[in-house]
Length: 279
Image (cartoon, rainbow, N blue to C red; front, side, top):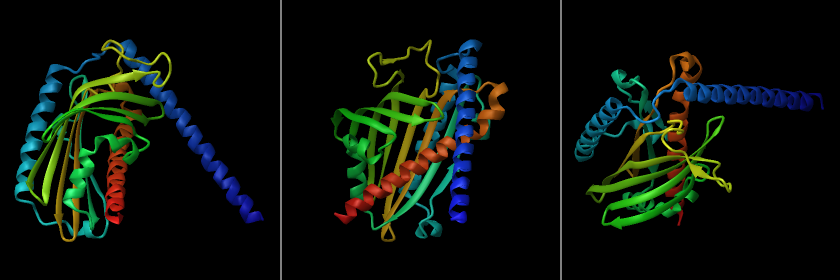
């Protein structure tokens, strides 16, 4: 009985600490949004930041295309089921004038999975709310022409505050052969949604957008080998820069969110592929 009570009190203490941390985070985020609104920082992406984003995107696409054509040997750690998440942001681009650029990469090996199943899953955009339940609210194909798709997607993520985004993407699929392929997803429109799901729901205009996301390009690659499927996702994002005065508070937060998002995405793709294999 005493041990049970101690465990219960311990759990209550943990809940209290988590609640306090969440309250602090919400306060900091609220303060940040007020500061961003009052400092007159640009709500739209600066031209120099957009140019740097496109430059890294082009270099990334060229590298991935070559790696898919001549792949390196599979890291033995993947055979042990390890997931690898890394920050590939070039040091000279980590801090841009008025903007923040991030380039993250996640890798995973799914035993028994097939390239054709991965391609089928990636193209089934209408199933994304089920596959990525908790982050993707809805996903709709607007048009399809061969391996080129135009889609719209609503995402919802919790950062201490709730952020809902409506984003349009141009998605292209390419195959080196039956065992290797890739997809490139480029954002064409990004809208932050206020009061999502309510009667007064609306997209914020450029003057009121908080700049959580200006641009997003996602690269998926897959290789079927060694009795399974090697998956890699790379995300390049451009968002509003964080004021120096708030850097101490948001530095760890900015690093944690992309890592958790990649882990979420890879695990859910792994689960979906495993279910397909089971069927």
